Image 1 (cartoon, rainbow, N blue to C red):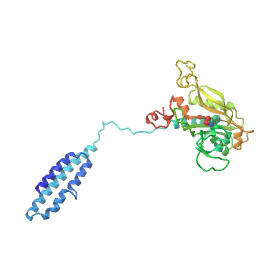
Image 2 (spheres, rainbow, N blue to C red; image 1 turned 90 degrees about the vertical axis):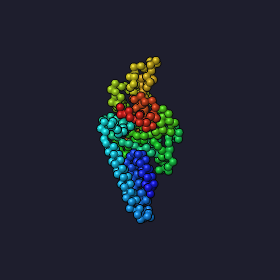
Image 3 (spheres, protein in one colour; image 1 turned 180 degrees about the horizontal axis):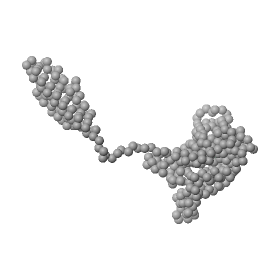
Image 4 (tube, rainbow, N blue to C red; image 1 turned 180 degrees about the vertical axis):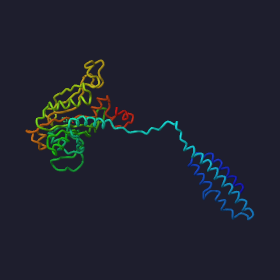
Length: 349
Ligand code: PHE
C-alpha cells in the first residue's frame, strides 16, 4: 500500500506540472479523484486488508485525496485568474468586415443616375426562352449569335413551339420584351443583371458578366433624346468633362444603331496619337467604347403589341465589367469573380 501511495504521489506531481490549462486540470480531477481512479480502487480494497491496518491506510488515503484535491483547486484558480485577466493594452482584434462588391456598387450607382431621370429599375429573368432572347428582338433564325457556341442552351422541355428552347440569356435585351409585353407606354426602364456566353475565359472574357439595359418608349421619342440621356449619364458617372462619340453600327433590334465611345477617362485624350507614351487604357486612341444603342426597331415594338406608328423608343446596353475596368484601370475581368479579398477590399474607393 505504501508503495502504491508513493507511486500515485509521484505521477500526480508530474501530471500537475504538465497541466497548463483549465481543461487539463479538470481531466486530472477525473484521473485522480474520479470513480475509476487508482485511489478509489485502493479505497475499495481496504476491507481486504488485515483488520488492524484498515484504519491507518484509510486515513492515509484520505490525506492523499485531500492533498490532490486542494493542489488541483489551487492551480485551477490560478489558471482561471490568468484566463480572465483583461489586458487593456493588448491590441484590439478588429473584426473582418465584408464590403459591397464593386460590380454591385457600380450597378447601383449607374441605376441611381437613371432613376434621377425618372427611369424605373426592373430586373428581368436570367433563364429565358429563344423567343424573348432572339425572335422578339428581330434576331433572325440564322443569326450566328443563336449558335450553341454563342449561347448556353438548357436541357429542359420547351414551353411551347413559339418560345423555343430554354437558355441562359446572352444579353439583357429580353428585359425590354418582358416589360413591353406587360406595361403600356410611356416607359422608361433600366434593367441590370447577369448575362451568359460560352466564351473561353481570359483577361477580357468571362462566361458570365453583367450588363445594364435601358430603354424608353413613348410618343415623339427621337435619337436626340437618346444622345441627351447618354451624355447626362456619362457626365454623372465619369466626369463632367467627358465627350461622347456615336459610331454607326448594326444591331438587329435597333435602327439606326450606334456604338458609343467616351473620351478616355484616364488620359483625357492628352496623349492621343502620341505613340511614345501611349495611354495604357485607350492605347492612345483617346476613346473607350462603353455601350451599344439605337432606336428600337419597329418589329420589336410590334412583337410586343405596341403600335410602331404611334410609339417610338430608344434602347441601350452596356457591360458593367468593362466600364469598371476602364474607370478603375483593372486589366483582368477574372479579378471580379475570384473573391480575392485583397482585390475586393479596395472597393468602394
Ligand atoms: N444587347 C446588345 C449587346 O449585348 C447591346 C444593345 C442593347 C445594343 C440595346 C443596342 C440596344 O451587345
